[in-house]
Amino acid sequence: MSQVLIHSCGVSTSLRFDDTSFFIEPTNLDDHTSSCCAGTHRRVKYTEVPLRNVISAKVASGVVEVQYLVRKDKESRLNLATTSGAVQNEDSTRAKKWCEALLLVAYQGANPAKNLKVLVNPHGGPGKGRALYVSKVEPILLAAGCILDVTYTTHSGHAIEIAREMKLGYDALVTVSGDGLIHEVLNGINQHEHRDQAFCIPIAPIPTGSGNGMSLNLLGLQDGLDVCAATLNVLKGQPLKTDLFSFTQGDRCRISFMSQTIGITADIDIETEHLRWMGDIRFIVGYIRAIIARKSCPIELSMKVVDQDKSRMLDALHARRAGESPSPSSPPSSLLSDDKKPDSASSSHDEWTRFKRPILWMYAGQGPFVSRALMQFPVSLADDGLIDISIQEITSRSALLRAMDGAEEGKTYWINTNRYFKASAYRARPLASKGNLVVDGEQVPFEEFQVDVLNRLGTFLSPYPYYAPEFFVRDIQGNT
Image (tube, rainbow, N blue to C red; front, side):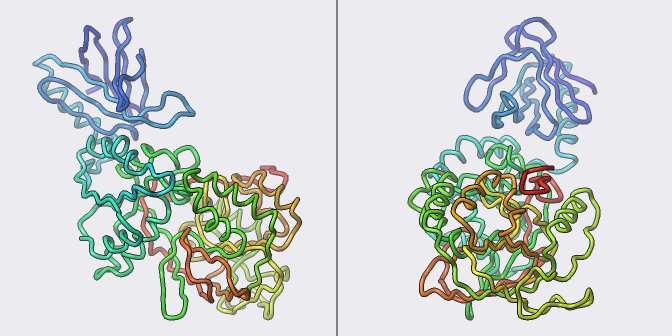
């Protein structure tokens, strides 16, 4: 069943596929016209589409229709396109079997028609969530035959309420917004009557917010801000188990999935709220302002440190991506200023180690990117049972300005004044009377807190069995 011939506007076109690609090949010298969701697509003589990008294939009333995602060029984003044409009456049965065979390999045997709960935040980031969902996301999901239960959020905390009461029959929970909506969803699931089962429903972010860190971590830089690529991940992604974190203040505990920060980095997040219309550029503007002020962050900080050897952590990352198990981490070395250091390889990681040096900020979390411009945790692993902690010691304004160069590639990882740890838990007490403390981009009370790792509690849809961004920088000069 190598190919089918379709006819449209006097043009005969061959449709075929192999193990990796779907091909559109006009059989004469005339161009064939394909349409896309934005109108008429460019005329092509030959089109090769990765099988993963095939969304639907069907025969109705003697017409074959194949829908797929395609780029105009290597740098552009994906768009939904359609190729269709009539088949001879005697070929209809054969064409139907051909379409079924194409979908079987395109979805690797999985059912394309998924039952989805979709949450759309129309006010997130630049405020284009509703428009992007209607024009880009929904057409792809409907083309695949998905059943959609759509809710537009109307107020802060709305997604918590929805996730807390949602039924358990969904194949995935789609968030059309930024990282803040994911934070709400996870905290709603944490209150669900059947909490453990609810946490197994995979979350699939569609990036329409400001930072979109989780989408970048799942899909990488090229596709992480592409709503069509993210929608494709809803249909074709596989569950990826990730660590979550319990963030405890007094008798209140909330779930964090990405980051907690205090100091300059928290100030940037909160003090640029009015610049959300700028997208993630707001964070760069905020950072430059913060450099000028260079405000210190008085804090008592203790960690259960597992590793702080940057080269070893990088090797563990590469081993995981290569399909190897990373070697066990060693106890902290003498670089750490502390009250109590383990003195042998057999020392327990349950010991609290105090960090005493003056700092500008503390950033803890997982997933390489927190925004497009900042690879904050380049050696983060999705499910190692640890939290990555980056502590910026006080340094000059010129050094902070230079740190902007290569921040999106993770070069700041190698800066000497950036102390980087992997820990099983940490706790902190702000010593200033006021300031900003931010969890997953959301402001929380500026008071003492503790963070513990909830190993593999989170579930997201991902094209890969690990976070997508690669990190090959081996020194501050940017050598790989």
